[in-house]
Image (cartoon, rainbow, N blue to C red; front, side, top):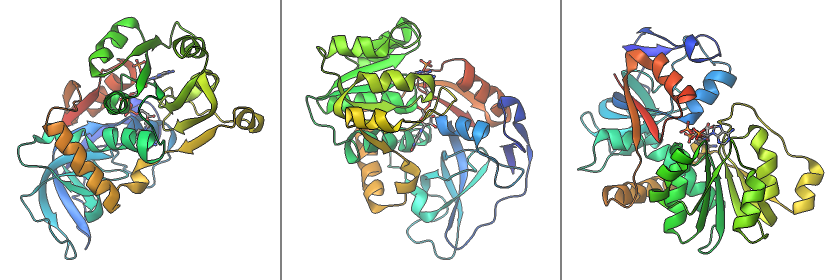
Length: 320
Ligand SMILES: NC(=O)c1ccc[n+]([C@@H]2O[C@H](COP(=O)([O-])OP(=O)(O)OC[C@H]3O[C@@H](n4cnc5c(N)ncnc54)[C@H](OP(=O)(O)O)[C@@H]3O)[C@@H](O)[C@H]2O)c1
């Protein structure tokens, strides 16, 4: 099969493209012939930080396509079915092997490109806001990194739940583009102090819940923007560096800090049901995700460069 792969951590330049052996089909495997491959924020984080378990390493969390083959123990899915799959790696390839528990049937009428960008972005945002965040209507949410995939999903889900949504992005033009998704207040994280802006918006009270998708140096401003007893969801580090929390910092605000790892929950019946409902909301037009740009898989290096450096709005996808 053709695949994008790398041998060591680094920037987009470590990505190569070529022929690799087809993946094995284990007893529990659903082998997907990829139709559309999403580039997830975590694909970049892994490329930079996570030492490849084996080499050549095929990165990539998510792709949608047609089932090519199934293992002996797989029930309910057969060659020809349309699915979107999750794996800790492997989606940047013509053939993507996932476990049965990480294969989600694509509803009739939904195109594979849409299916390829829904589960991780919307599922992560949903879990951070509701399953672990306990968001209630009328509360105020701060989404750091609101123009990205998880961020745009969070803005829509929080606004539709009756929350006041504050989001950050780099520049007024990007913030204006987020407004139709439900953003009530935009903050340019490059030029504004996030904590000052949030205090002004909330009348000095602070926000109820923070979704941190960027990590890095912005974290201190996010902590400062949070009210006492507020909730802080640690989700991602799109800025590229990993901050930490101080002992007294946590005590002073009596903060609840929750680490989100949606991939850990994606095999569960709860998440299968959640994704079914999110697919329905997407199909009904209640949720949407802009595709910023499409690349050929053979241009995976350029695609990663675009995601890393060009401030895409929404998702970037690749096609084998
Ligand atoms: N824990 C989990 O289960 C989980 C699940 C999914 C994703 N994630 C992580 O969440 C993060 C976001 O994922 P994604 O798929 O949404 O990524 P994405 O689509 O690439 O978006 C990343 C966003 O981060 C923003 N950003 C970058 N640097 C920033 C900074 N210094 N301050 C504020 N915002 C900044 C960017 O905004 P501008 O372009 O406007 O600058 C961009 O819109 C990634 O680190 C990913 O690994 C975690």
